[in-house]
Each structure stands twice: as structure tokens, then as C-alpha cells.
Length: 408
Image (tube, rainbow, N blue to C red):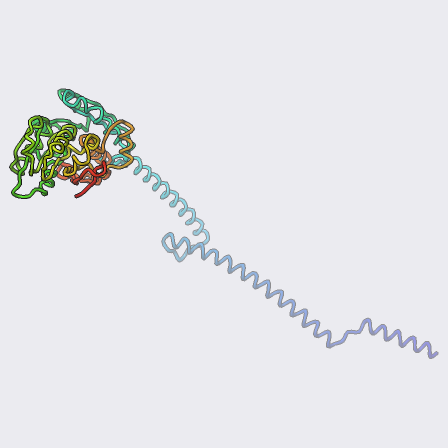
């Protein structure tokens, strides 16, 4: 009986364990469930609110952009925004096309200035020369000009015309004219071409023509610089020859000082003692006279010569004692080494030949005009051209150790 009662009680207890719910725990569970529901609801609302805010921000951003580009409108709606965006894109497209068309029209109508000149020009040069007088000099002259244009790496054409055929040469914009008669210069004033005269110095003529450029050596300056060694009173003897340069030198020397004149074929050597001698003779004749002076034991004070004796031949055919008192003026300066090499390759001399040198200086002037560069500065030789005449510099030399050495 007791066993039966105990079994009944145990069943009752197990039955209660399965179905029994603690009131306190039930309240907590209910609160937790309610809390979770509220949290989920809040999260959903926050998410929805966030989405709404993001959408609104996007709309505001779009409205802001439209308002920045177009006229502000406080009553813009989504539909208006969409329409205004489309209108804005159309307007931008039209403006872009209009700008491109405008640029095209500018490119099509743009023109270079008339003063523009290429740095690598096509130079057309006519050389007008008295072929009878300059026949032996012509190849060297042409090669010196060739050497300069090759040195500058330009395209060029050179055509030689006789002095009597000037009319055909007028088809060329640049004309290098080898005239020895200053009166020929005045005839050039009637033409519009640019003329370049390597032989004549502007002091020899009276003209202010802007289209004529002179490259003749400044013998006047050379004689003046040599004359600075004269003591006053002094006895001056000029030894002359019948050449164009000799006569020109003699004409300038007569203006500087009183002198006794002797022809190189008729020299009274005893009269050369204690004198200042000016040689207006070529190197070969000068060397012969110097040798005779030394041989006859003549004692001049000093001996002078202008550009005419700046010649290596004078060194080759004289002895050191013959040239101890000789001072030579020279204006061939600042020749670029590469240009000198070009001349040697073409069998032309620019270092000692003044005619080739003056021709090259004027070729430098032509190049500057063709490239529209500095009008007054001959940059390759560091010389200037003033009043249409090359402004030569003069240095004085003596022959020392078989070479020309500058002394002043």
C-alpha cells in the first residue's frame, strides 16, 4: 500500500515538473519577448528612416547641383529635377559643339604674320662680279660663301653674273656686288634689292641707302692705329705699288701725315735710315724689300703695314732678323674653328684672306635677315654692323717664332 502511495506521489511530482511554470520566470520571458519586438521594430524604423534620409539627401544633392548650374528654384520636384537635368545636358552639349565650331573657325582663319621667317631659310644669292678683274679670286670667293652656308646648314642657291649682266641678277633678293668703282654704288640706289659690297667701305662713298651694306676693311682705322707709334717730328716713307689696295692706302696715308713716296721698283735705300716705313706692297714684294734693308744694313726706326701684309707667305720667305721692326695691322678676328675647317675642305682661306673674310661677314648678315634675327650683330664673328657698315676691330701683330703674335 505504501509502495502504491509512493509511486503515485512520484508520478505527481514528475507531472508537475513537466507542466509547471514559475510565475517569476514567466514575467521575465514576457518582458524579454516584448523588448525584442520593440528593438526589431525600432531597427526597422531606423533603417526605413535612414533609407528615406539617404533618398532625400540624394534628391537634395541633385537639386543642389541643378541649383548651382541653373537658376535657383525653391519649388523643384523630382520630375522637375529630371527635366532640368535633361535640359542642362542638352545645353551643355550645344555649348560644347558651339565651342568646337568656334575653335575650328579660328584655326581655319588663322594666318602667320608676314614677318615670320623660318630658322632654316632657302637663301637665293646672286654674285655680280667683274670677271676680268676678279677671275683668279672668284673660286675662292664662292667657296668661302659656300662654306658659311654649309656651316649654317641652310638651303641656298648661288648664281654668278657678270657686272654687265646686272639686270638678270635683279631676280634674286640678295645680291653680293664686287665693285671697285665707288661710282657704281650710286646706280644701285635705283633698285629695291638688297646689295652687299665686300670691297668698298662706306667712307669711300656718300650714300644713305638702307638697302646697301658695306663690308670693306677699315683701312683708315688701321693706319691711325699704326700711326700712334710715330714720334713727332718724324720722317715717314711710303713704299707704294700700282694696285687698287695700294692706291687706296696711299690716299688715306696722305691725309694722316706728310711722307716721302717711293715706288717699290725704285727705292733709294740710304734714305730709309732713321725713318718710319709704310709698306703698301703685297707680301712677296714686301719680303724682298725687307731682305734688302737687312742686307744693306739700313736702320729704319719702325716698319708698318696694313692688312695687305697679314699673310703667312711673308713668314715663309723672310728671316727673323728681317721682320724684327715690322708691325702689321689686322682685322680678321674671331673666325669660328668649325667654319675655318669648312673653308679648308673647300680649298678656301678665311683666316688670312680679307676678301673672303668680308664676303663671309656679309653672308652672316644675309643669314640674319633671312631668319629675322638680330639685325646689327654678326653673331658668328662677334662683330656689329652700324649704319650699314661692318664695324671692324683692329689688332696689331709682330712676327715672332714664325707666327703672328698680337701685341696691341
